[in-house]
Image 1 (cartoon, rainbow, N blue to C red):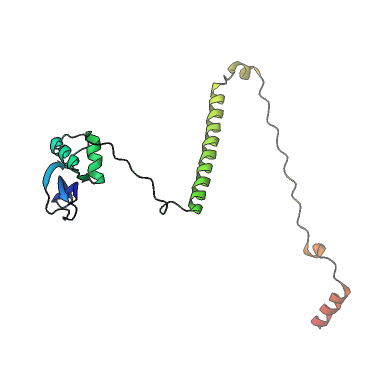
Image 2: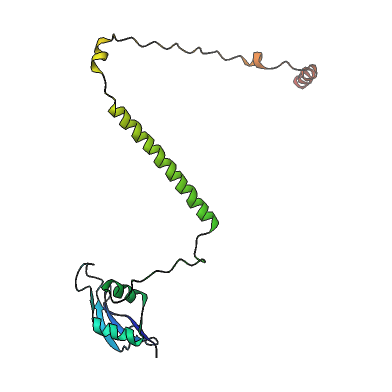
Length: 181
């Protein structure tokens, strides 16, 4: 007979309420259990005192007898200080991302680093420009020079089609004359 400390669901639809119970491994989730050890109400805020209620003496007893908690209950017992904190296992190799995805993510990370560096340079340039004092007196004393007028671009006229076409070979002229007649 293998025992587990686990959650048994109660409450209404979309309003969960769980009892923390000791039950045989083969019994259904909400079925028969050996003893009720506490409650868990996920509808309450995290810092509320009644969110997780534990009977510490009975939990210690069942742990000493050999009952094993489920992962979720192990986390709750770790927070309460009754067990070592729950350690999540590493990601299995089967579900690890493939080569193409890791390459794509590395390229995106490199682009993000470059973008952040460029943004930092722009910010530094703005800070430097803001730190340089503008001499107002020198601007007032210097005569205002007129801006040079830009020369208008020279527009070349299009070349006529007859002038641009290459000279025809004599054989082509004869062929055109035959076609026209």
